[in-house]
Length: 208
Image (cartoon, rainbow, N blue to C red; front, side, top):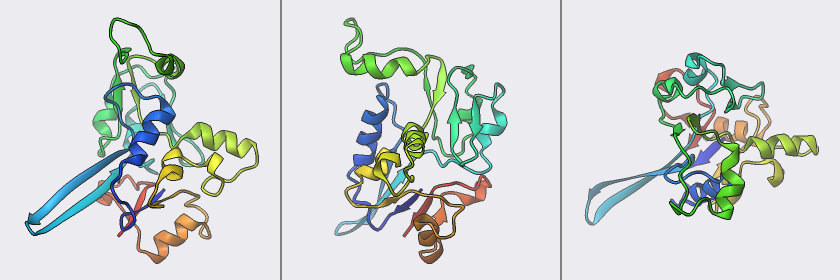
């Protein structure tokens, strides 16, 4: 994924879309937007930085997972098999980006009244006592490819956050294809990785 910071308006639409798309439990966000203000009035500057799982090529979370629940697919996505996660949280400690959350229990929006219809649809796919994180909407990608669609080109096969970005700041595609839009943007706009010094080779790039 490539995120153009010059286009991002800080609307947090990506955060809301991700929350709804994956029916995330209360207090859990996979697509966050960080804000920082610097300077003094009237010369104040606001910096906006959308963050999510970086799907690193050399992912620290994959290396430390003792059960093999966290794994890296051939297409580069780092995923979690909730049925194999033992809840040790090693991956959370190893991730230098703080991209993971822990689902410790069922936490309905209305305590004492059970799950809402929305929660009843989404919550069953998550296992209490497991780590969770952004997976680039792998269900969309996998189903889209089965239908002959191309991720990053066809909306049905593209992560929801990229589809909902009102500033058109997010781009998704194949980093291994030098002719893909994401590869071209990284090459021509000098795309950079967040904290590249960690040595994990993130799969998310930013443009200034």
